[in-house]
Length: 389
Image (cartoon, rainbow, N blue to C red; front, top):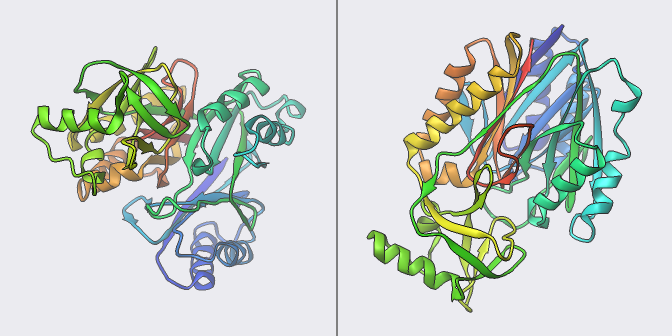
């Protein structure tokens, strides 16, 4: 049996917000302690104070989560708030793991996290899933996911996202118990008797010719086809009748992401700024030699993508009904769509059904590694994980 509830709060005082969230959880769970509380919180909060208040108020056995850039639960959304999902289950086992120092050594961080996994000691649980939340500003998240996949021999499926900080792109945190840590990755190991469904989809399509990344350094895109990256985007703006202001490029970038060509489709990367040398700083790493193009989308395409992601996840439940869902979409999607992002969430709720508890956040990148689906680290992509009843 699985019980779940969501809670949402936008009180400004961290201690008061934590108490209010804990009281909401207590009320819905009849005073029973949740096995896990997953927390997404705006950068305006004192995280340690907030997390400690949640723990004290609802007697949570485990807490994990991350800072965010837009928070929501079923029927409520906003910025500068906290959203949580609390779960209590007799058919699942939860375990929180941490990997530190991502910037220095992703391999070491991945080993630290996987050394704390307990799946091998609990063979009665057939299905293994990890909710992965990373300090994406540390970079190399794709490499981290690959390291985790190798270390676990492909026996776990992954989903999650990059921590946010209200679109400041300054400092992001992951939550490990009542600690808030930068330059780290936190994982929630979920062992279950029934499969969890994970769906991933974006609604973007190519709008330029294919180009090759001729120079890049991590998240810095220097040139495409040996032409400065900013110049390529300027030419695309002129060719498509769009305005591209070098001093304020974000309005253009929100509608013109970079797509990296892979076997499974285009993996999105959002440019964030133009550098004096004509290079672009992006939200995620850009591999040298990759084939890329500039991508376009519409609000309707993004809404449809979220619906398709849910449908894919539901198919994996093997007939079980959905109990709760975690949803991640990019902060760039929220900024681009404006009020239409609410329509995306409404479509998500309708597709899942009124009895499904939903919580999530706008993140700096989305994580999905599922057999047969478009895997890795993404931008502007809807990722949903459905927990069965």
